[in-house]
Image (cartoon, rainbow, N blue to C red; front, side, top):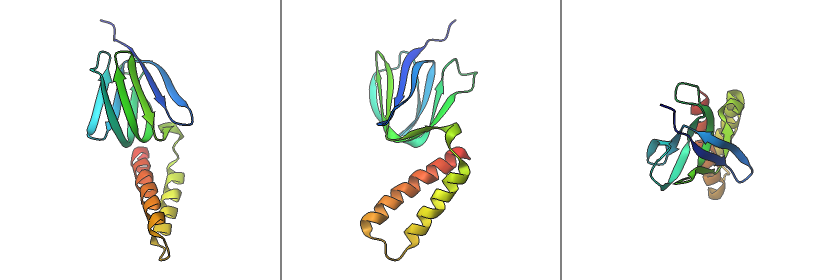
Length: 137
């Protein structure tokens, strides 16, 4: 029995990262991870920062993996679209750079002269970098 395929698109404000027919997409949902297959019921959902796996062939082949910084997913009868706040191919994430960025943010957060609005921005950045660090192992 052939594996059913459906259209999937992963896009950010800057550019599309993936567009094509797939067999399965595993998504880091705000309320838990979930998978989308062909024929999935229509829905709209929010995403948390994490790894999004795109299976182009079938579940036996390695997926294309992306780190998404959150966003929205929309399943319709015509396919599945993820509008990511930010996304990058997992193979393009450099653990050393993530560690350096995380250290710099932690150092900035430790500064005594930080304003509340700066602290909130840095805390968001820290959380995103920690999620990226977890994603790259």
